[in-house]
Length: 439
Image (cartoon, rainbow, N blue to C red; front, side, top):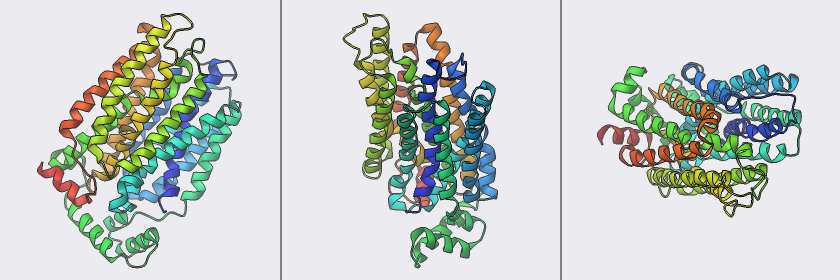
């Protein structure tokens, strides 16, 4: 399948996201030469870079193409990994490396769902776009599992290997036929589509691509067009909302801080093991999503996912409060670990996977390179906010307070999404645009 090398880009992102769990554990147990005072800010540096790059990435996607933009991602990650391997004891280098890796994450989130959405067949688009979060989980799981057996330098070398693998495997990938058609390169677009489909007769699909691009490119490619046009504006509200509340659901703190949040004295499982199994539950949820998204539909999965997470985050906060204020052999010691796994399942079967699907399929060709980066910025900004304030809220009001806040956020989007989302299952880009403009 042509999309497989592309999906490895999210594996690289997953390696950086998953890195925080074993790395913070090593730092917290004095197994590195780094003295980190605010783990939240260290984690948030990745999100800071993620917020900065989407707009420039949109310019690159529109002017040099999807393929060359994505080709830049692997080397950027390699530079970041090499920096913290060469200077493992310099906190300033770690911060800058995470910002630089965050820049590549913003490019990954803006470009790969768009590219995959354009090269995937309509009937398989939802399932194929689900490969993005699946490979993100694989990257997280790989570095969290193997990372338990490694020291800090070896952990970073492992991340470098992931990035190098993606760099090599993606290089031969063809350009998006939609992009080539936008640039009036029909012959190149047809050759690209034949390569992607591995067949010589692509006449019908080429006619659909040509019709779609011709109609959607009639309007100007501007931010004004994004917000003034009814269909574009509604697509942005839905996708930006899903992106923002995906992060406000609490997923970033669950990933980054669980290894140092779960009490090690009265918890029946090693926190690092619990985190690995949490990632496994996310992987199972994403596989389930792949089977359900083109059968059950996008909207029902989104509503069920956020409503379930609202309940689970509230229970998680209550259980952390009970453990913090109870005896060492508290009967609820099992609760936060089990709820953690259930949360991972609920997140990935809906919200965690659907955001990338929406980014890949909701926007018209003329505004896609403007809208997708803005949605990624909403996602990154929400992560930066939650990661940055996690430690501060924990010290001021107790760690459990964070999770009560996430419960409220999940409930809000479960209600709002019920009113604003549309169903895009099995729809072509033209059909989606028509629904957005008429309902």
